[in-house]
Image (cartoon, rainbow, N blue to C red; front, top):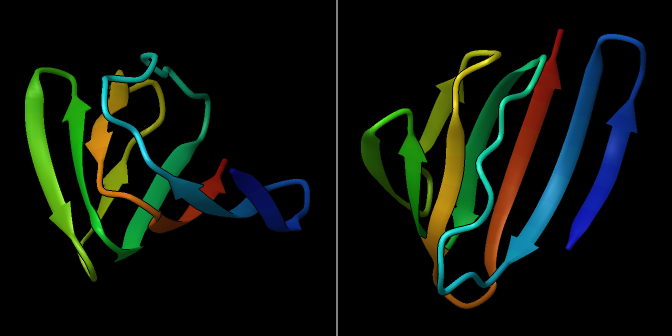
Length: 84
């Protein structure tokens, strides 16, 4: 579930609640994406690198970097900031 908390011409902040057991789709976004996992655990695939996040972990995904969420714990809660 995606909820936009703030958005203007150069910035978008979203709250995301997820529970994913199988890999999601690959993304290639035109914006930089900074994400922090506020609650739960998640496994990301960034290019060919697998990254495990736990509550409080964060990462920056530069624009046009292929990435996807491979799995999350139940009710994982993210805060995501997109900037151009």
